[in-house]
Length: 442
Image (cartoon, rainbow, N blue to C red; front, side, top):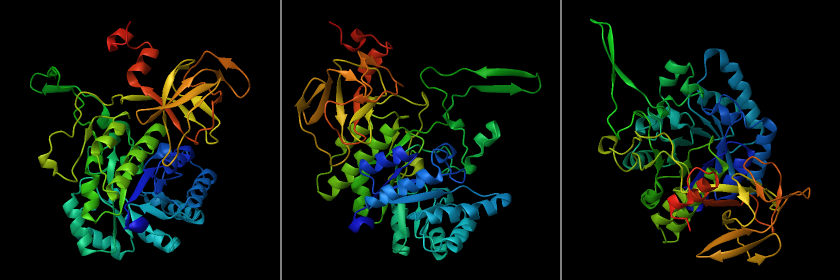
């Protein structure tokens, strides 16, 4: 295993800020890309060569790793473009290239022979036979298909002990086998295996019956309470099984999905799994602790997917009634990298009290001054705002979401600290629910 026999925690890096956040919140390594050769076009455009190089340097300074995603499937007309792109990425000295196609595996081995190759989940490796083929081609690690079982991982490791195995433990689940889906291509002309999936499986659908003899179409009525998000998979959440996964001794890396998700997601999910891993090795594993944090994020409902249970044994993997739901908390603000100021993400006013979520390993001291008060209650830190003033000296009663002013903190906080509040309080501030509906009336 990596990291002195500890399992690696691998987090998504959708842009430079989210890369830094993931690393500060406990990731051992991050993954991302710079172009449409990655399977996340939107996040690929968030990076250019310079910012990606800066991210790699930032990670290496902290003895962390960066894996480059080049995991889409090339058309014949793009082969030369792939060659050029691999050569450019190799110059940045990343710690691995993540690829899907056997042809690209061979290409990468030739162009960048010193950079390890990780086989993308898009290759759908499910057994030792396929794993052996890729290992013989020079692949150092396989990112197993989301549909694999822990028992099959054990079989692969037994057959090929030197081959590293990486598995997904959290994030979006695909309706098909890890991206092998044509729905988006049929409806939108956007090809999932080229990185442009439109997420058609997340939409609600109406069902019709057509009689060709009478040329009549009938709309089938939805059964009350059932819902019509008929292809919408719940989000994977394996935090409660981290102890079982690590006890197997065959998994080298736990991967979090989500390059297009928010900085808050990158921070909180990474930190939750960091604690789960560290607690396991400290013989202090408590699934409830990690689930409480993961429940603060937006999600489609959670499922423990198929690693422990076979697909035919599961009946709770689909979210038929909705595509996304609020988590238990809302981000109020994100502290800047220098730790001196914050920017508003949700309406915040003088007198508001927000919870402080710190990067891994950070500590605070209680303070009380004209700008605010930081105090510890029930094992958590809370910040009360007394004064809202920008670096330019402008004072506010309230700051609204999207305001780009940098607001002075009452004291230095660790860079990328998150300030959050409960979701009900956030909805009340937005006027979406009344205080008395949540029992908050006088």
